[in-house]
Structure formats: structure tokens, C-alpha cells
Length: 178
View 1 (cartoon, rainbow, N blue to C red):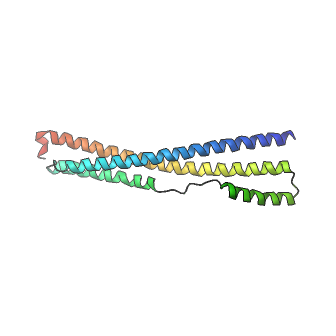
View 2 (cartoon, one colour):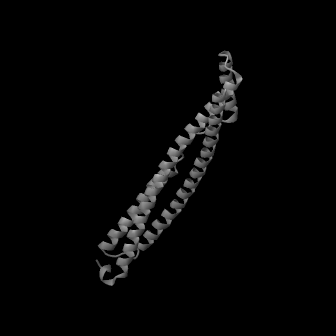
């Protein structure tokens, strides 16, 4: 009997932790979505600034730097768009479906003459496993999105670096005609 109680406590612990982590994963996904949107606005700002600077650029060196900056900012948009796609997050069963599944499982367990205490333990175990799988899969999706956002930030940073280099070139009168 003590083993069953220990199993029940462990399953309760896993279930509570899985539900807590599921909530954290969804908060993380929301934050990533906000970051992706902000990066998109920032990328648009950088691209607009670069196209305005094109009017000032004269000479092959300045044009080459500007083309590199524009290319990097456009390249930075690709991971942003990719990160913004709707991913198929795994969700736990809705309460009505969950109840149906548990009723089916209960019918099977009753036919097998499983005691009620063990049936409840089985239900909790199944629910904990379901939440755990959701958390694992959704965490993987969030990590993919976060990696794409890092790539976008790197490319946009390089684009801004090229833009700064261009401004330095344009500010030096001897280099302007290059």
C-alpha cells in the first residue's frame, strides 16, 4: 500500500510539474512572437534607412557597402519570416475529449477488474505523460524559433555594421569618390 501511495505522490508531482512547464512554454512562445514582431519592425526600419542612404552614396566602394548592407538586412528577414510561421504546437486534450478517453479507459480497466484506486493512478499517469510530451515537443518548437531569431538579429546587426561603415566612408571626403 505504501508503494501505491508513493507512486500516486510521484505521479501528482510529475503532473503538477508538467502543467507548470506547459504554462511556461506557452509564455515563452508568446515572448518569442513579440520578439519576432519587433524584429520585423526593426528590419523594416533598417531597410528604409539603407534605401534612403542610397541617395547619398556615390562611388563604387560606397555602393558596394550599401549593397552589402541591403543584402544583409534582406537576408535577416528570411529567418524572421520563418520564425513567424505558425507552428503546430501540441496541445493536451480538451476536457471533453479527455473525459471521453478516460471513460473508455475506465471501461477497459473495469473489465480487467482493476481496483478503483489503481484506475485513478492510471488516469493521472496517462495525463502526466500527455502533458510531458506536449512540453517536450513545444519546447523544441520554441528553441527552433529562438534560433531563427538569433540568426535574424545577427544578420541585422551585420547590416547595421555595414551601414555604419558606409556612413564613415561617406563622411570622409577623400573616400567619397572611390
